[in-house]
Image (tube, rainbow, N blue to C red; front, side, top):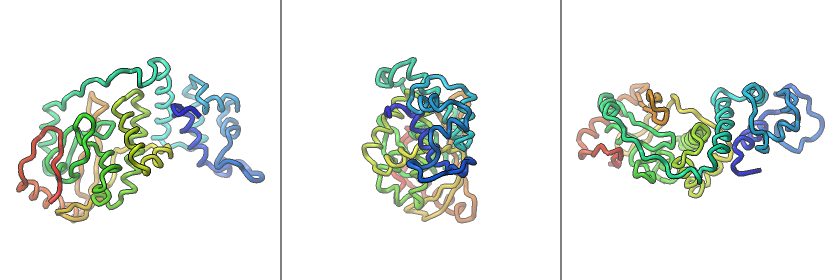
Length: 299
C-alpha cells in the first residue's frame, strides 16, 4: 500500500477490529485476516467489493458523504473517528489538487499570540493554562502552567512542544505517572490533527521526527487511533508538590481553529492543595520571561 494512502490504512485498521459476530455475520471456518474481509464491509455498506477495494487502495478518488457514513456505521466508528474519516477524504483531495507537501513551500510565518490572549492567561493565574497548536507547540502559558509541565523540548521554531516532551524526554515518564495513557492520547491527537490539516509542514515534520526518535511513537502511530482532547483528567508527579490529578478543558479560540486554550482545574482537595502549593512556589521562584518558553519546573 502507498505510504501516503492514509485513508486506506485507516479503513484497514478499523475493519480489522470488527468481528463478524459483531457485524451480524456467521463465520465459517478459519479466517486469514482479523476482523471483516473487504467484501463483507462492501456488502454491509451497500457498495461493490471492487469499489471498496479501490477505496482502500487509494484509487477511488471521490467517495460520497453517504458512502463514508455507511462505512462509518459498518466499521462502528465513534464520532471522532467518523469525522476523521471525512477529514482523510478531504485531505486526499487537497493533496491531489495542490501536489505533495514537499512541493507546498515553506510554512507561513508564525502569527504572534495576541495581547488579549496573553491577558486572559494572566487573568486565570490561579490555575494552569496554556495555548496549544495542532502540533502541540505551547505558544504561551501562564506561570502555574510553566511550573506544572516543566520545560518540554523546543520545536523547530524554538517553542516548547508537548509531544516531543512525552516521547523524547525521559523526564516525562516521571512527570506523568500514567505515561502510557498520555502517550496514546498524544499520538492520537497528532493523528487527528494531521487529518484536519493536510499539508501542514510543521506537523508533518514533527511526526517524522518522533517516528525516527521513538519506537513507542511508531507503534502508536501505526495503530491509526484518533483522539480528541476536549476534556479529561491528567495525573502529574511534580518534583516540588508531589502527585495529584487535574481535570482539563480545551477551548477552541474564536476565529483561529489552529489554536486552543487548555485550562486545568482541581477536582478534589488534594489537587486544590497541590495547586496552592504550586502557586506559592511559583511566586517565590525567580521571575520567568513571557516569550512563549516555559520555565524549568523543577526544584
